[in-house]
Structure formats: C-alpha cells, structure tokens
Length: 310
Image 1 (cartoon, rainbow, N blue to C red):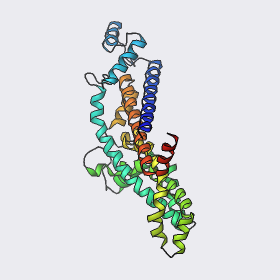
Image 2: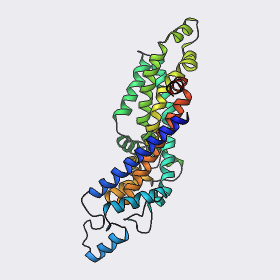
Image 3: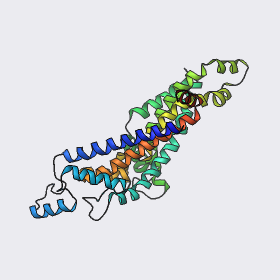
Image 4: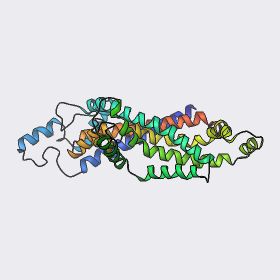
C-alpha cells in the first residue's frame, strides 16, 4: 500500500508540473498584450507595468519565479483587478462553486444509480426504455441549454424560482438541476450496463432460483459489484461538478470560480488564467488520486494484485 501511495503521489506531482509548465508557456505564446487591448497607453506606462508584474524579465526567470511562488502557495497578482491576488479570488469563489457542485453531485450519483438499477431490473420493459431515454436526453442536451430552459420555464413563466443571482437555497435549485443532468445520465447508463452483467452471474441466478425477490437480490448482492466501476468515474465527475460549470455560473450570474475564469480569459489576465488552471488541475488530480485509493480499499481483488506484484 505504501508503494502504491508513493507511486500515485509521484505521478500526481509529475502531471501537475506538466500542466503548470505547459500552461505557463502557452499563455506567454498567445499574441496580444493584457495591458493594451483597445486602449492607447504611453510606452513609459507600459514599461512600468511590465516591470511591476515582472514581465520585463527573461521568460525562464519568470518561469522559475512562478514555480517558486506556487511552492509557497502564491499564484500571483491579478492584472485586471489591481491590488488583488489570485488567491483572494479562489478563497471567495471556490466555496460558492464547491457548494453548487456538491449539491449537483449529491443529486446526480444516487439518482443515476437508482435509475440505472431500476432499468437493469426491468430490462426490455417500458421502465428500461423510459429511464434510458431520459439518460440519453441528459447526455445529449448541453447544460447551458437546460439552464436557459429552466430559467424560462420555472422562473419567467411559472415564477417558482429566482432567475439568477446567488443568495438563499432557492437560488441554487435551478443551476443544480442543470449541472446534475449530465453526470446523472452517465451514472445511470454505466450502472445499468454493469448491473445487467452482474444479474446474469451464477450466484445471482442461484439466489433467484431459491425464490428470493429480484429487488432484494439486486440491492443486497448485485449493486455492490455493479457499483465498483462507477467509482472509477467519480474522480473526473466530482472534479468537474464540484468546481461548478463555467457556463452555468455565467448564465445564473453566480460569483464562483467559473465566472472569474471567463472574465480573466476575456481580459487576458494571464496570472489569473494560470492560477485558476493550476488550482483546477490540482483539484482534479487529487480527486482522481482519492478515487483510486477508495477503489483499492473497496475491491479486494485490486489489493491482492498489488500485493502479488509487490
């Protein structure tokens, strides 16, 4: 287990370094100037700004300084928002994105598992067709289309929920539903395919032959084995959902990290773009690492293989 953790941690650090390096040099290779835009600025002012943000130094010096800042937990100052650092925006925006994503995740995973299990238990029947049709719609329709539809139907027409902004719990319902649709559909389809395979196993058929109800067999014996492959999908899905959707946050005017990322891209705020990219990448990789660890703990076969190869 120690060797497994060390190997995964080493891969995580190398991957994170690759992301940081590629993001840094790609951002500096993009044409354009973050200070000029459509404005006319005297060269003396530009030189002062370049010196203030360290952009007048050689590229390799800037790169080493940026790595040093990351090691100290400093992601640099924002170019657009003077006097504020990227760390401040993350501290303000991440709790909001995390809350929105956590609600969507708590809705998507149990709902997807339930729909997938019910579809597998009623394979070939109308329940199966209904649930799989709903999951197909969830996969096919983009989240921003669902978000706009929910705003039109439930806010503008029915006046059940606020159109946008961020305040009480009622402001989170529509963006949560829009954000949870895609992962719910994926989990449902994945659970169904795994559950159908598990229900055909000999031990399941033996239990059914003894007269044990299908629902009881499916929940007590089939679901545990069918849900293991779903766990491997939780890393990317949790990272993507917990950090919130950029477009959903923009549509519903939610002051999360997604909105700041869009503003930084539009304004060519290089430190902000790089800092948020590093933060999102770290969050994703840590989630994948934790999911791998959880899968290893839950599946004895994985532990046995690792001990055998060790």
